[in-house]
Length: 473
Ligand code: GLU
Image (tube, rainbow, N blue to C red; front, side):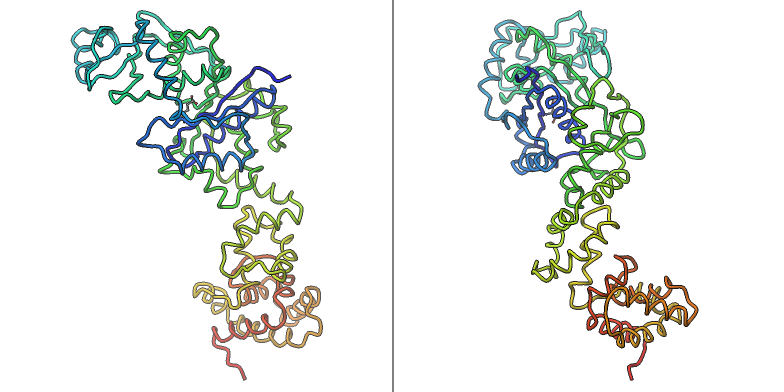
């Protein structure tokens, strides 16, 4: 039987979908899945000036990519204004809201003159004020009094009503404010559990007062998850830090790795355990163990997770995950031949990358008709060591005479050559790798040379030789 637990994820589509939002969505989703309840998706798009349809699409596609599926919605607040209007009428009728034309300065001045804490008796509070073009609708906070938020993560948080504003619920232009629409929807959608970002905690007593004024008998459970901070312990910000889920997706993160990393931002299953499948997360996740201190969003650690997840893919899965990244390059046509070559090198690349996007950088040399060697690399690897010119020239000769152009023979021949000039293999490999791939790092060299083939290998060795001034005779 379906449980009556109902959670919601209620993003405002005002920008790229933030990793903090993804973590909030994930926790809600885990709670719903564990209890067999429902996960409702609600787009909070009442702020016309800041919303855009592209952000809505971004949220839906990021959630889908992460595997966070919704049971209901997406509902859009912009399509539900009638409901808010009815709630507003009720609040006015029952004396819980009043039109007020006071400016912020006037209110502050009055508070100052009368003394007392902010919010105390600073408002006109005349429920019979007529509505004028400049007036906004304020909720009338009952004073004196206090509201206690029973928070699953922070315990009881007490708010004295003297410190709460008679907050605006409808702007002068008639549009409902966030807290009103949010509460009316939570009631209408029978949300029983509200898990959201810590930044909303100061709004929660206002939400509770609204719930009560609108006749809600049983309040939902509240849980405010900790903020995410960067290495300097600053709150993650989209201006300073990389926070968009979409960016990580484009860099070549696997959704499974990202979800596993995100779940640990504020929670741990206990012990040293960090890696979990989705099923294990659903089973183990426990809101009572979520920490209230800020969680460090450590991109390096997330990338390490991604590498671990990449290595766990089957060879075919890895190839398929790499395809969209290969397709971004003009040298990739996706022909049967190219796929065959990539499939051969892929297992070696899989061992060496922690982002899918790194794979195409490592294999491009196999598919380009010509490679470019940067002047930096030419100087530092090919020209600096006087031996390099000799190595390139000798190796060209040796490879030319190989009857079988396979990794093993290439390896043996190169090793014999190293012994003959009394130089370690790694020193000989460096100029060869740069000559053939245009890079200092990449998949294992001899397998790469085999795949590149004899003709291209010899051509590139000649070109590299020319670059460092070896004359062909
Ligand atoms: N729309 C709010 C936001 O995106 C969320 C409000 C809530 O979860 O209650 O921050």
